[in-house]
Image (cartoon, rainbow, N blue to C red; front, side, top):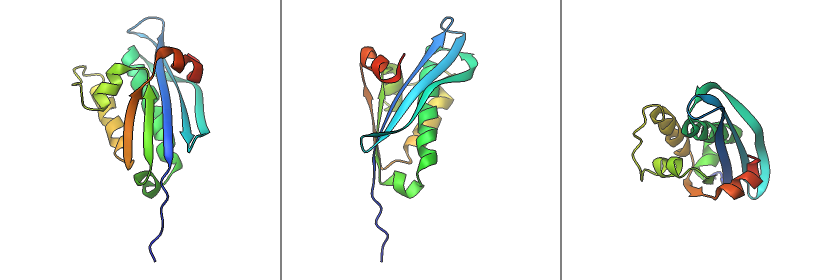
Length: 140
């Protein structure tokens, strides 16, 4: 008998930012993950150790959320699941989707890592949401 794997509908809403000037400020991010419409995990505010650009902060928040989700479920479950990433960063969205080239050397390793994690899901998409909506959901 074959094991029945039920896929999940997972949503990751993520946002990164800089305190103290872009570039070179203190990097932080927040994310919220939902599974089948229920909030299952969230970061209040993750401080990243390096001084960075706003775009690096956006990627760090994405990677933090993806690592958390991937750590909660087996590869079998992820392979049958659908992930929706919600971000207010058009640059990150279009780079992850492969619609824009990544010209910035500092972002290439993060983009590559994000794509590696995304390939673990059966299906995934990245949606843009307005900044005002992001502030309501993650608080900054």
